[in-house]
Length: 551
Ligand code: ADP
Image (tube, rainbow, N blue to C red; front, top):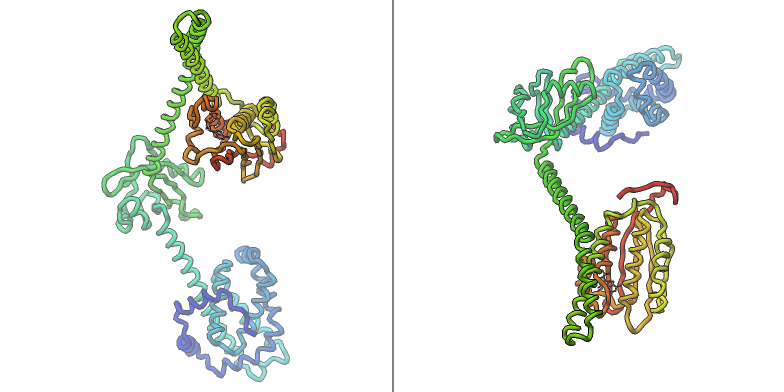
């Protein structure tokens, strides 16, 4: 019975790399003076091995278990029972008398497996020695031993064991080399420049990425000092290599910003990590320095900072404006309103008809201006006067909005259909305002030929609840989907539909303050669907769990 070849593809590749053709195998056997007749004679040992292999494996595993260096291999193996079976099969196959290509691949697979599980080569090699020692002893002690008639069998077993261990060790070291090559490739193509430095800060090795980042040819860097490549940039704190090393020794590694001199003479900022290279006392003095270019990152950081500063300034301007609107404009406006109203009351019918009309225009204008200023004020207060965000029931907010619109609802014979309302993280007063504005619009912009039907529903989408407020009103032309959310933008005159054009702007600002977004879709003439999302209460917070999220 042939066992499955472990890591068959790798073994096949390895056989090619090691040039293990049938000719090469023949050469190896000839070198050992191992003849075909001798090979075949080993079959005489098969019954003995079949019976005793598990006993030998028991001995072998006992040895492996006896030394701390080898014991950890057994601990790492996913199944020791599986390893015992495989080992027993292995030693039976050794005397199978057929040493063809499959046999070779099998042996290469075994070398690969032992390299992977980390049983050191000295122990793998010694296992073969142990086998010979054991077989010799057991066969001689056995009264029915095939050695009696064929004493040369023991030499043949020694030769085939040598041949076999040669294959296993070949693949073991090749697997180790492949791993080292792989790590070297990872090292060379790392996204960061990696330099290995000795204790005097001379470069021992620089990887290929060095060229992309610094412009320097990595092959020319060994034996040059790190200090040649360190530059100075105004905003980069200067640390000496010794200071970095000190931190690396204390904390395991150092991480921070450095300035590096590019081959073209410029100095640029990098994000660097310094690690101690060795793991033993013997090589504690070597360091690994890794770094990546931060130029683009720094530019983005600067731009972001600039934008944030601009934004803060414009926010402050807006707040200032709201303040001016509330205090400085309100008072003179009140004067204009009350005096024009006084004029209207006192002189109505005493001047010309034209004068009456002018006065009426002035009164209307003043009243409208007051409405606009109040609207602006409520818009600016969404952020400045909002309450802290906390878990709250959208149903209550909705019910309060309905209560405030009671008259309009009954006058328009509107029907409101709702599905279950979730709890969200929000400001209950603003949520009420949100529902009230949307419901109010659905009533105001209703179609004249039918009673308003408004449907409100909520659907969970990841961390959010997506709400929709659907009506069967006049609808909105798609070209105005964005415009209607802009402050004071309206699609109708105040004679057609009263209003200032602030409602939806406030809705959007409320939703955005809550971390969500808002939009609309519509079929003009049939109705509109306003949608927005609000953050769900995380599942680990109970409905009134007292958590507060600050905006
Ligand atoms: P206002 O209601 O004061 O005009 P809004 O900001 O609430 O201000 O609305 C802006 C514009 O969006 C409205 O003038 C109207 O043209 C349109 N609009 C809002 N809601 C609806 C709706 N439910 N159906 C049709 N049009 C709407």
